[in-house]
Each structure stands twice: as C-alpha cells, then as structure tokens.
Image (cartoon, rainbow, N blue to C red; front, top):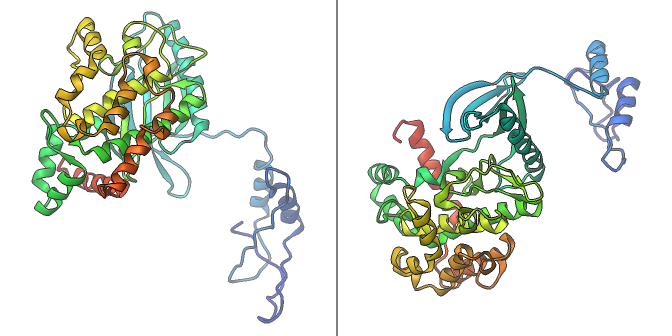
Length: 407
C-alpha cells in the first residue's frame, strides 16, 4: 500500500535485508495473497525514501473492511461522446466511463430498441435471451470476438456495455469514398504498395487482395469456432459486423442476434443478403449458417462488388444463392478463379446445402482445402506478406486521417 512503510533502518549493503511489516498488514497478506489453489504468495514490499511509522491506520481499516465484504456497490457514470451506428436493433454510442485518479475508459454502449416489438413482454423476453448469450460471450474472452463488459436494465431499456474497438468495420472500408480519399491522401509509393498488397479497385467498391481477405476470414473463423464450441450461433455475420482493429486483427462484433442452439428465439432478426439458404427458407439456423454468411463476405471482399442486392425479393435472392457456384466465375477476379485451392475454400463456405460446407469453423481452417492451406500456398509461392502488420499500419494511417477530419 502507498502509505505503508517499514520499521527500522536498512542493513549494510553487503548484508541480507530483512523486512518486518506491521502485524495488521501481515495478517491481511497471510489471508489474502494466495493463489486460486490456496498457495500463499510472497508479500509485496514497499520501499519508501523516508522510513517512518505509518499514519494510515484509518485507511488500512477501510481497506480491511472493503476487501472482505461479500458484496460491493458503487455508482458508475457514463458520458456519451458520439454515435457509432444505428440499426434495427438499436443505437450504439462511444462513451466514456470515468474511474478514480483521472482514469477513464472508452466503451461502446448499445441501447436495444423496443420499437419492433408488438408488446413490452415480447421485448423483455428477447432481452433475456440477449442477456444470457452476453453472459456466455463475456466468459469466452477470445481475441477475435467482441468483449462484453456488462448488460444493464435502465428503466426497462436494456443496455449492453462492450469494449470499444479502435478501427474500422469492413462495410466502411469497402466504400468507394474511402478508396478515393486514400488515393488522394497517400503518396504515390504508398498507394502502389497498398494496391499490390492490401486493397485495390473493384467493379463497384474496393476489393481486398486474396491473402488479406483470407487472413481476415481466418480470424473470423477462429471467433466463430469459439462461439460454436459454446453452443452459440452469431446469426448476423456481415461486413458491418466485422472490425479491422488498429492491431491488425479482425474482430467479430454485435452479438444482438446471437442465440444458444438449445434455446433458439421465436423471432429471428436477419440480414437477407448475408443469410444462408436454409435461413431464408425458414429452416433451422445453425453454426453452418454462420459459415455461409462469412463465405458471402469473403466473396465480396475478393470481388469488389456486393454478391446479392438488398433490393432483391426473397425468391430471386434464394435462387441466386442456390446457383452461387455458377455466379462465382463471373464475379471473382481471374487470379482467384485460377486458384483451385482458393476456389475450393470459397465453395466449402458458401455451398447451398449445409452438408456440403465445411462441417465446423475449425475444419474450415485446418482441412486440406482450408484457409491455412491457402496461406501456406502463398508462402511456398513467395507471395505471402506480413498481412497483420500491413493491416495494422494501414488502419493506423486511416485513424490518423480520421482524427484530422480527412475521412
């Protein structure tokens, strides 16, 4: 503790040093500083410049009392800074959570809207499902999965507190505006490097180079694997729900539509353009449905165009997804179509029939025609890049541009 000081004088430099904490603090250490297995840890010693008797008796007493109370409570204030996004489920804000001694933590707040529900009871029932899933996701703590920090009921309106992810979602990165701004702001040398390694022009929007796209999808497969192992389906994989972080890693966000396989919701919220065939047909949504949605995202990243239009009616959309294998050669770049391994990987994700897809997120990475195999192929062909580092530098550049108001 800051106010704790040792008794007596330091011994000669050449002699062993002894330390004699006060009996009260020593007893506290004996009781508190143990590992989860019960093994006692060595007490932490505090060396002060002046060695006088401690005068923190009252603070020590408060510490002793608070550290032993079975229940703690305090008031936390959150200050909304700016809106991050808005959709059918509600609004997400960037907020600031202050602590003691000038500590502040940026967090993302999602307010779940009751507008789409017929009755308040329907909203409450759905929010219980969201809370149960949020509690499970909070315990997973996967690097490629959003970290949930809390889930609150404020006057019956549910609010989820999540980590704030510094970076950009794929939907924003894939806009022609973003591509134009980058071309205008980057030097010619930097722009050429980006086009060769990371992102280049596509028919409708920017498209990612194959190695980068697969690296992003592999991160997402790792996150989905963690969810699926805990019996959770994300149920809304799309570019807007995948972030590229300043660290260079991809992270799946927004678990508002996620559910436990053993407790599916009566009402499902879907994004038709990225929903699997079986979901559009009203059949059961499974972990394999997440793989199909991620496959559609991969095709969009590689092709530089939306695979399915949001304006398509249900019948045309369903037909297009059933015939997707016939569409792929026409919309994917030639270098992708020529690569049998990459095409096999794509088909293993987007196959119309779930039984023809990879049978798990893990297998989509490790099987002989999975993501890892394609990345090894790039290495063997001397076509690989330090994708994580390249993405990190790129995102940092974009964040700096955003701070300067250039985006």
